[in-house]
Amino acid sequence: MRKLIESLGRILIAFVADIGGLFIMIWGIILSVPTIFKRIRLIFEQMLMMGVRSLPLVILTSVFTGSVTAWQAAYQFKGLVPLEWLGLTVAKTVFIELGPVLTSLVLAGRVGASIAAELGTMRVTEQIDALESMGINPVGYLVMPRLVAGMIMVPVLVMFANIIAILGGMVVAVMLVNISYETFTDSIKSYVYIRDVVSGLQKSVGFGAIIALMGCYNGFNAKGGAEGVGLATTRAVVLASVLILVSDYIMATILFNV
Amino acid sequence: MIRLEKVYKSFGTNEVLKGIDLEINSGDSMVIFGASGSGKSVMLKLIMGLLKPDEGDIYIDGKNINELKRSELDELRTRFGMLFQGAALFDSMTVYENVTLGRSEHGDMSKQDRIECARRNLEMVGLAGTEYKYPAELSGGMKKRVGLARALCMEPEIILYDEPTTGLDPVSADKINDLIIELRDKLNITSVAVTHDIYSAFRIGRRFAMLYEGNIRFDGTKEEMESSDDQVLKDFLSHH
Ligand SMILES: Nc1ncnc2c1ncn2[C@@H]1O[C@H](COP(=O)(O)OP(=O)(O)O)[C@@H](O)[C@H]1O
Ligand SMILES: [Mg+2]
Image 1 (cartoon, rainbow over the protein chains, first blue to last red):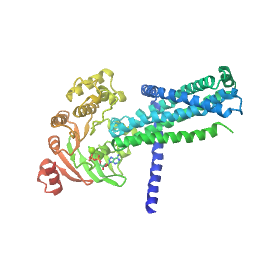
Image 2: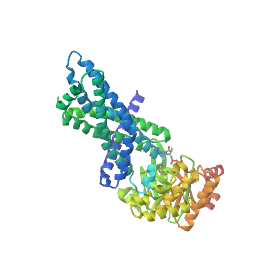
Image 3: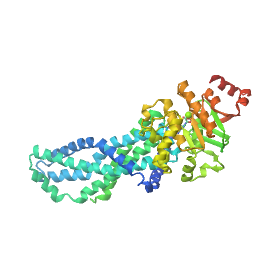
Image 4: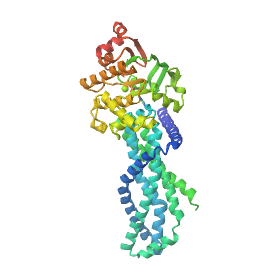
């Protein structure tokens, strides 16, 4: 019993310390915002790396996301809902939920993990200490550019994913469900609002921040060699995925009134 | 001048430093030795302000570094150079970019001067012409020498060496020792080295301190050390 309470206590202390550490890092990022113009080159490098590294994976996942959405919707609609609503259903689910959330989850595994592994390696090989010892602020130099790049690139990739998912859904609808191209697109044109698209992209800015922050925070706090880097990478991916799903629910209740 | 006063540092339940008192004067060449895991790297990181002491104070030229603002601390750090245990070169950058990063970040040197600075310091460490190589293409000893060139490019008044010769073959190790001696004598740079390599310690040091179980067990010259009858010190010297 005593052991149990002790270990619960330790977990609680570690949790509070992590929250504190995360806020200190966020504060450091805020303080380094004035140097953002000096960091344009680093931000671009990060954006390029995130975009190039993730695009193939994003394309692959979104094709199948769109296809299965169309197929499942058609199956659920059978005998209940006329199939001219198929396009609308696919587009709305993709724009509002599936595009942003699934793409961000994939990116948590791709981008978040690589940020954590890179910064974790820099931590355990003392490269972060070396930056600091030269009077260079590592939060401004390493974290801020990754955060900004994440907040820009994740929505960009989500936009790509949305388009590809809807095309994928359309191919399934036209080829396998046998509805016409016009039927599929008509309902999209008349009932998908700009607001749906924008709210999905707004969410993905937040998801981008979560992915980059979790990668940076866990990488920065990696300790003890290669094993520690592996642990930090896992933590970054798991925490980012959980936070994406939780914040998605919270944002849904704020952005959409039932 | 560097002064540590009653410095304590623990990590969780691991008490590493338990009340360190130590003074290092300008122009000194101080070597701190101690077994692996005795807290040598931690001590250097405390002096650089990379770690904060749990208790006690660290003064650099009379200024308490724990009371400095971030910008003042960054300013102070530019007077220091540090050679890290594993060299800590930035993997994603060339040797040239590594050596001149501090300068280009502080924006106090033109591109032309930076190229010259890299050339001069790389030549000094015997690595002329390696500017466009990446750290992964260099051997352990070469990495350390690039690390030293990187520190030198900041024109430091004080250099901290973390195990400068550990893990190197005898020839590379001696090259590093020679360099440290050259810097000490030619440029009159204050140096603090930590090591468990006694041979290297005797070559580069003028004053010696022993870190043992979280305290400074011994502090003095080579002669004082050799005539000491402290059994712990004697054991360490005979085993390394
Ligand atoms: N950032 C850290 N977090 C936790 N423990 C640390 C940290 N840095 C060092 N330690 C611990 O402090 C002790 C001394 O480490 P160190 O100063 O690296 O020894 P050495 O004398 O070999 O350089 C070791 O037990 C090490 O595990
Ligand atoms: Mg060490």
